[in-house]
Amino acid sequence: MALQNPTPSEYIQHHLTNLTYGYHPDNGWSFAHGAQEASEMGFMAIHVDTMAWSVGLGILFCWLFRVGAKAAHAGVPTGVLNFVELMVEFVDKSVKETFHGKSSLIAPLALTICCWIFLMNLMDLVPVDLVPYLFMSTGVEYMKIVPTTDVNATLGMSIGVFLLIIFYSIKIKGVGGFVGELTLQPFGKWMIPFNLLLEGVGLIAKPISLALRLFGNLYAGELIFILIALLPFYLQWFLSVPWAIFHILVIVLQAFIFMMLTIVYLSMAHEHH
Amino acid sequence: MNLNLTLIGQLIAFTIFVIFCMKYVWPPISAALVERQKKIAEGLDAADKAARDLESAKSQIEDELRQARTQVTELLEQANKRSSQIVEEAQDKARAEAEKIMASAQAQIAQDAAQARESLRADVAKLAVVGAERVLGATVDQAAHKKLLAALAEEL
Image (cartoon, rainbow over all chains, first blue to last red; front, side):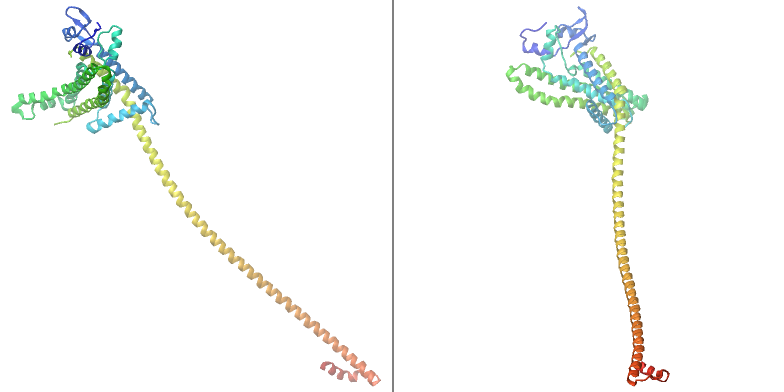
């Protein structure tokens, strides 16, 4: 259902709606036509565009780095290997500066987070109308190409990190140590409920803040691109070029922040208080 | 902005990518980096060692050159000394030879002179006798005048 001469709010609404496939109470398993139907589907729905673009970009990352890994040798590096080694060394340095334990998981985890989020954020620099327009002409109604502007994507990753935090906390400190950390600080054993509330909020805040920071920044950035796209075409470059240049910084920075905070949280999980 | 199954899907995708990266991407690259680090360190060590070797070779060359130079001067000195010695010896020899030749020549001369004098003396005595015979017109008694003639010849 292509919109003919949409109002600005319809245009924005359209650009911020995911292509949703799910179980609708009335229509059964189907693609949602509009945000209303999508929200009626509740939890039993999936954002096809978010999944496709993020998995595609993840496969691109894996392929690129696998090419580098296969070419890896101790001689003079060339081409893809140069770039891959640059990234690996950068991540390795960041991990070693913050995390002092020994873990074969954290460095690859950080590399994956950094590169994958960067690639997903990078989609933000594709002109906002281009891909939706192309898909519209093949009959696909909605297409949101920046997975990190979907809170499901960022929350999915941050929940992964959260599970790792809990796993390492229990692995390093034992169940007793982890529960003790949650209940016996900062006020001692006579204030256990209060301590639990305080530490519990602190613990839950980690994945939520991770997810919402990335989501919020990219969502806002995308929204501004959409608003700029509403201007007359001869004015657009005047705003969209500076914003895009600024956004290059933002997308790298957000990928880096997500990676660094993951490392910091995991190194905190490894330390005894 | 709806929370739905995408969340779980993303979590699964994320897990798979991390595991892939952990198994197939990170180990070979970091191993290669470590190995390259080792190789570079070895290379730098080798370069240092080569520089040190060069330095020691240079100083060795200088030593040998200095030694050769002193040897050459020594040899030259020796040769000079030897040549002057040879010259001196030759001069001495020549001088000695010359003296010898001169001595023998003088002896010869002296001998010849003596001989000549002797023969002259004999001739004079004979001439004197002949002269006297002519003067006296008679044969001189050889025996009687022999003593007188010898005395005369001695005086000449």
